Image (cartoon, rainbow, N blue to C red; front, side):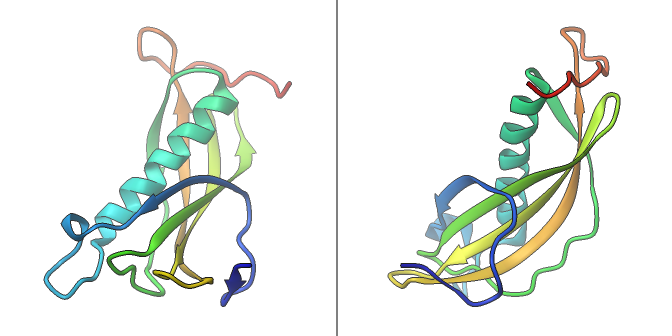
Length: 131
């Protein structure tokens, strides 16, 4: 059973991955850019499912890191589609670390990602209604 130290995650678990030595600095802290890249991947998955097609990241709103990720931690990314416009959508994304060989889960960071749906020529296209 997982123990959450910082409340409960919001949204759906969209991506889980293991933090490896190649993703860390000399002190064993995982690079923030690696965490952000995993968040972007998760947004791409969730937004493409919602748009039923190609999407791109248009913007990332403010992000700050509350806690570090360490080598061996499992990064868990939760996504929630907060708003759908004509061609774009805003997703709330949370990154949580399940600490190595424990049941402790701590929130690392969160941010709002704005994703845009694209057509076959790479131009913005309307996001279809929900099914």
